[in-house]
Length: 461
Ligand SMILES: *Cc1c(COP(=O)(O)O)cnc(C)c1O
Image 1 (cartoon, rainbow, N blue to C red):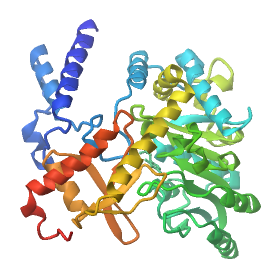
Image 2: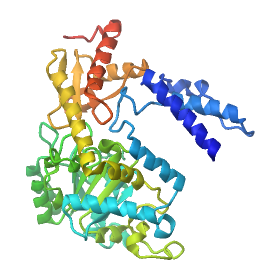
Image 3: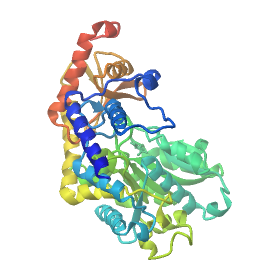
């Protein structure tokens, strides 16, 4: 093992060094991947030297998501304390289904869930779990909503057409999960949104009444805290009142920006969160733990047991259900996603998590101000989001993003809202400084200036 850890050290040290000079790995077109790298698996073993060489090549060729060149998705950066926890979780390799197999690590997960519930303001009756990503925690919420609406479903299957409500700006996992749940994509209704992509609660009640009149059974409303493109926050309070009246489950998908709960300055964006039935957020997005760390909490833990517990005498042989977390999880064997969040939280405190969140918004302010004050740019996003959506000199967003990628300059993506398509810069990496955001614009502007021929036909400003 010692040699292996030494090898790990060598490779990661070299990588960290190289990332400083080359924040973006050289682009390998997918059509050239297998001729560029030797990834083939053969009958005979490699020598240790050959193995190290191939491994290092692979690591160096992979996209660099922790550098100041990566703004492509809703994660990025490298939080050292969280990485330490993740590495230890791999070494320990506990499985989180029972206290017998995970022991003290069960306590780690329980402490996180308890503290999250406390911050929301929920009592001892609340609980939660972790699942591999926000799509899966959303899935769990829909399963609980379905089972609460009809206790027969889990034994007999759907008895009646069920309806789920969300908005077009919500994550694609909502309709996808409706297929998994047997509800069906066609029974997902899209609540109209305002000019910032936020659900307009005023339409909801009529939609529910129409579906009931039509013989449907409305079961759930999904709201988003940080819509995937614009980073907007749906209003919780007015929707909660409608859900209460019609006995619908209310879930808030905070995968992207639910972590505002840790910030005194920004938690107003999820005002009313204590009123919902379930809430999920990804610590691997705003908080910056390694992938994946997705948490779901429910106000009444009964629903976790109702939907996810199954007896298994070969598995649950000791201890109380409250310590055998397999009774409330989607999976059987389950990796320890809690430890990386705990090592970070334990070391920096809740005030440290708050600083991370506030810093991301401050970075976003810097980027937004730059765009707002520069006549070559058009801004499409709003204050109090960490998504800065813009176009530069009228150049189509997809063209500039693709060329920046193919030329190994920057990784950034594009998105669209209503009829506009734009570059979507996300300030999700808390290791970035304000200057790193300004450098982003500098690199992009320089790239356009150096490649005028590629862009000439488009430039309108
Ligand atoms: C990222 C995201 C998800 C999906 O989370 P994964 O961890 O990628 O599965 C769901 N909802 C929203 C709003 C997201 O931004």
